[in-house]
Length: 226
Image 1 (cartoon, rainbow, N blue to C red):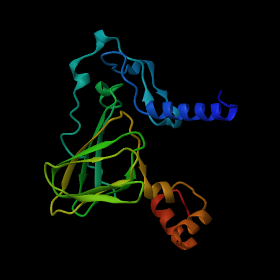
Image 2 (image 1 turned 90 degrees about the vertical axis):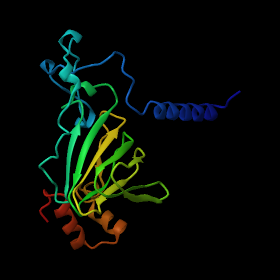
Image 3 (image 1 turned 45 degrees about the vertical axis):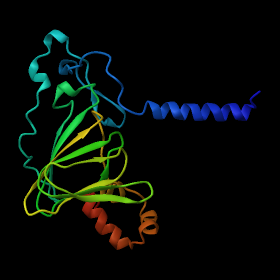
């Protein structure tokens, strides 16, 4: 017979295993679900994305399954030289419930896509043009990185920090696909210095002075006044 403690331990391990098994986008239960904006959006936890009721299948048209937004780069480049155009259910209705999303990234010469990670998706990166230093860091702090050239593909495992830098002499263009319609993104610099973490903790964690932390906070959190 199992003791009570053994039984609780078994149940805890089983519950954890089930949670991991289902920690991904659910399989669709119908051919497709084109969102019907007439019924309004339902915000999910933390406002991470929206859920919309499906259109009646008789109202669905071919254009719901076509997206032309990735044919050219975004004009909005960040101060790191990065411009991203995303394809997700909010602008590409046909993706809804299919567990997929897509993005185009353009990086200026010398520009970077800063260290970040996607908590809910693995990313597959395809270099369409240019030379890009790309890689990720595993949970043992081992770096897997190299320069990718036109036509090459790299996979970036779910939840691991990864990065990109244009090391060529021309603008670079990449396409990234995700196995989630809502992969999420956590940018490391902003998460650490732009989120309001206690300053004393940051000083002890990074060996930085109060002045240095203040400079970084102003850079990564424009709302910070000090």
